[in-house]
Image (cartoon, rainbow, N blue to C red; front, side, top):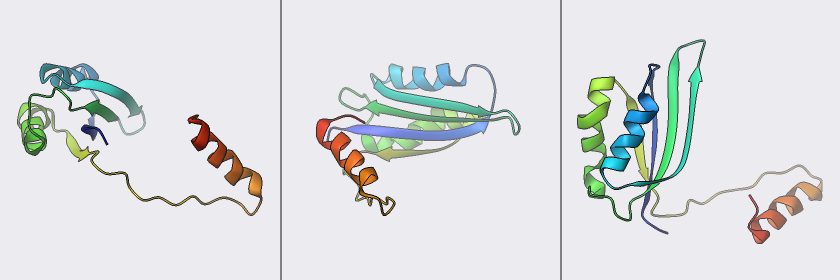
Length: 114
């Protein structure tokens, strides 16, 4: 498994959050592989999930959480978690008693289609 990390975070919504967080990754030579963000308009909460490569990242894995906290989270009051993608987690697949659901999932996995 390549060196990759996933940041999940949430805070009060305000302008520029995606730019600030993605720029933090860019400044440390990270390459963003996937980014999803959402604002709950009822509560005014911002949610983000960023998956990035640590291949050329300037910070050591042990420094990720403390540096993100120091550089962004404390000032912007962001609650966050950083997960390192070093192992593939075990998982279970639950499908209905009809076989076509399972066969569809297995076929997509085998062919590389998500």
